[in-house]
Length: 205
Image 1 (cartoon, rainbow, N blue to C red):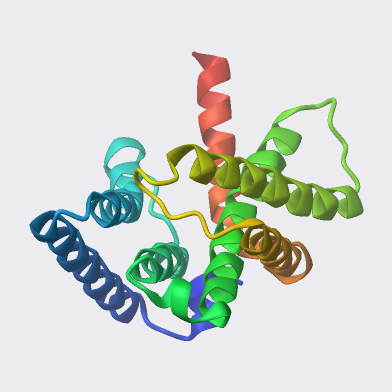
Image 2: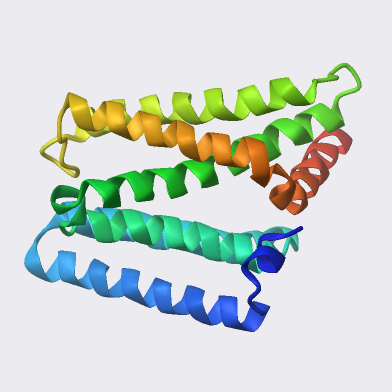
């Protein structure tokens, strides 16, 4: 089952929602620039660039990402970008939801890459339980990397909220990873196939 089928939206409806969310990022980008809040400007700019990656993949490699997955990615980066405007500070639950959603995207991408390597290599034969463990460990590792990056950029581009916030972030990163490990791995099969094609292309080249 794809993300589109799970969300029960037509592709045209999903694309419309994605365009609306991208417009929201453009507005936040402009707000950050006009008010001189370059942390907000940089966050919105990076988020907007991420939402444009599926179009770049389609143009450069002919890969059409599942519209539902594109929507899920766009929702994740919007949650984070809107969060820096204030909800992260005001509502603990918002931070928890944003990290869970973002972690599920990271988990899906990590799983797709790992599964593609496994299918590409004749020497790899990984039990399904190990794949599930890999997803969670991968998400936690990326979460730690992100927290270190936030500390490095603290006061420049991002706001660091403290050790308790870091622990909470990592817990909900793990929740996002577990959701993908238990229910979501099958939703990125198209991405697995794309990575396989790129691996074959690199080997043939």
